[in-house]
View (cartoon, rainbow, N blue to C red):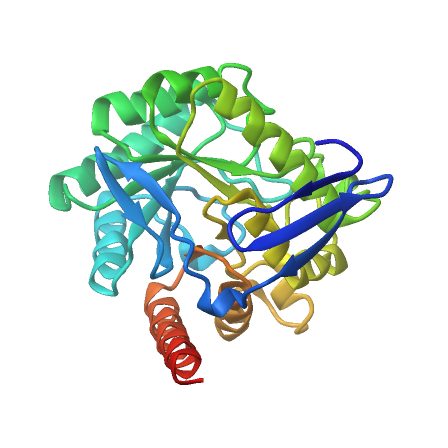
Length: 321
C-alpha cells in the first residue's frame, strides 16, 4: 500500500496517510446494520458470515498456554470436539504446535502425528463439520487437505515462516487464515515495535492480501494477531480500532480467548479468563469480527445470538425511522 491512498469499499471510506500509513476509517453506515455479505468457499459451496462464526479450539499439545485446552489422547479429543459441536461451533480448529512464548519447538513429523490423530477422530465421527488446521508448515497443510479434506489452513505466521506455504495454498485452493505476526513464537515478544499498531498491521495484511490474490488465492480470512508481537496496550489499541480492517472486505477473525491481555489485566490466571474472554469477544463482534476463535464454545454462541438480536433491532429501528 502507498503512503497516501483513498478507497471506497462498499459503503465505507478509508483514508491511509502519514509515515506509517496511519488509518482513519469513516463509515457512512453503522457496522451493526451493514448489508455487505462476506463469503468463503467451503467444499464448493459459499458460506457466509451474516451470522458470525464461532471457531472451537482443539489443541493437541502438552504445553499450550491455557492448560485447560490441552487434549492429547483420542478419548480427550473426541470429548472436546463433541462438546464443541454440541455447543454449536461453526468450525473446529486443530493445532499440534504450541505458539505460546517460550514453547518448545517440535519437528514437523511430531506436529503431523498430533494433527493426524485429531483429524482421524473428527473426520470419522463428524465428517461434515468445517475443519481448520492451525499450522505454519506447508507440508502439514498439504497432508491435512489432501488426506483429510481439511477446509481451512490457519497460518499464524502469515506465510513468513515457510516459503512454500502460499504456493501450497494456491495449489490446494483451500481457504486461508492470514494472521499478522513478527518473528517466531520464541522471538515475537521482543519485536512489538510500531509507529501505529492498527495502521501498521493493516498495511502489512493488505500487502500480503494483494500478493495472495495475484497468486490466485481467493478465500482469505484476516487475523490481526492479538498477542503475537504485541504488548498488552497494543492489543487493546488494536481491538479498539478493529473496525478499520473492514476496508479489506474480507472476513475478520479475532483470537482473544484466555490470552494474557485478559488475565494479566485482571491480575488472574489463564484458567480464570473465561468471563473476560466473553467481554472482549463481544467488543470484537460489535467492531466487525466475523469469527471468534474460542476455547469455550457455548458462551460464544450465546454472545453471537444476542448480537444478532441487537442487529435485528437496529435494522427494524432503521426501517421504522
